[in-house]
Image 1 (cartoon, rainbow, N blue to C red):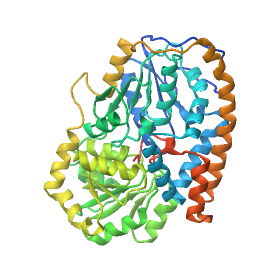
Image 2 (cartoon, rainbow, N blue to C red):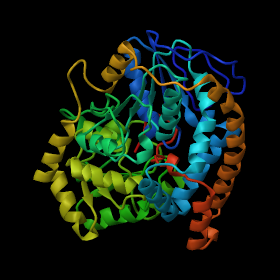
Image 3 (tube, rainbow, N blue to C red):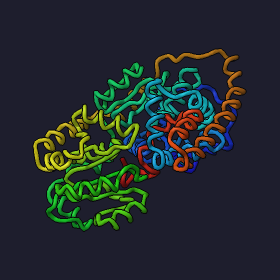
Image 4 (cartoon, one colour):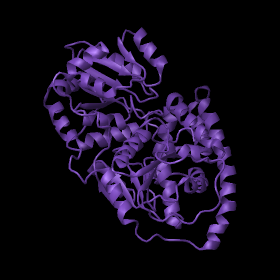
Amino acid sequence: MPHAERMLAGPLSASALPGPRPALTPHAGRIAIFSASVGAGHDGAAAELARRLTADGFAVDRHDLLDLLPAGLGRAVRTGYHRMLVRAPWAYQRIYSSSERAGGGGPAARALLRAAEHRVLHALHPDTGAVVSTYPGSSQVLGGLRRSGRLAVPVLTYLTDFSVHPLWVAEGVDVHLAAHPVAAAQARAAGARTVRMCGPVTDPRFRPRAGAERERARDRFGLPEKAPLALLVAGSWGVGPVRQVALELRDSGAVVPVVVCGRNEALAARLRADGIEYAYGWVDDMPALMHAADVLVQNAGGLTSLEAFAAGLPVASYRCIPGHGLTNAAALHEAGVAVWIRDPAELKTVLTDLVDGPLGARQREAALGLFTRTPGQGPAAEITRRHRYGPARAGSRPAAARARSAPRRLAATAAVACAVWACAVVTGGATALDGPGLARTVGHSLDLDDFRHGDSHGNGTEGHHS
């Protein structure tokens, strides 16, 4: 599994799956975490949870759901989603909004996820005592396994965003972990029965700067010593109107833009040609860059926002990407931890207030208040408790129904393979089609709402996340 990281356990080949296993039952000491390599946000949360649980003495197995999709469809999902964000963001907005109104994924998305259940179940070590998801698609798969009785250990979903698309909430999941009451309320409204507020998870290197860290960080990156700096991030894919925003920040006169373009080196080169002096590709030491900055400007509302909160850096959402970028901006604004600038005419005034005014002070206080510093609290502690006490009694279905599921899985796999392949081709040619034509094609080919969170994050767990 090229994108899966198995910690303290041997590798598992998805192409050589073992025979049928009995239903998994709780066992001390091992936890599995499922994520997806659509950007780096889901993987970043999974990595930090794994680090904390490993420090608590657990063996942790990490898996990438996209590597467990049948027929190699994970790559098509990842590529198609990326192309849609870059070439046809309006189509992504349409799919996101329609699936949100419908309360989750459509038939093709559900069939695709059902087809992954067998591989997900066999990827689990027999001694697994609890399973955690940081991606809505894997939550749906794991919830289905719990609901059918094939998975007898607790399943927890860690909600990586403040806004909760209905696809995050899967029947069968025991607990949904939320970072804030806004996210918790949205999860309950989407049907989650048990929600726990336990704060965000971020790398411990993200912390408020102290002493001369600001000066040392600016010297390291060659940044101006005195000027107010706005750190502009656009995820590991560098998507959204980054160039426009960088120029607007510069022209506002309120800040000097420092732009991180992730793996989009072409964007970084274009910005430097535009006269944006401080434009970077992938940055390995984002904590230091945050210590150098005075405000963060973001467009997706994912992991980088949480990291900025932990670093005591005020956050502004501006010219957000469609779908989850807009809903996250609204949720963060409602929570009082980030301001959503919707009018370009307000850019200079709001940035000035965030850098050196009461708005910035209020935001820093509210954001830092999200993070628990009490032993026995936080997402890892909640996962540990569920692992220790085990699940409530899980429902099961008759053996005959389970036996009939294998032919259905084969049929679903064949049908979904065609749908995903068609969607990847369509989104790749987005710029060559007229708007209504592409929307009709995408709308009738595949539901992409289960990829909603490719917020930008690449495959790494360090450097620039969003």
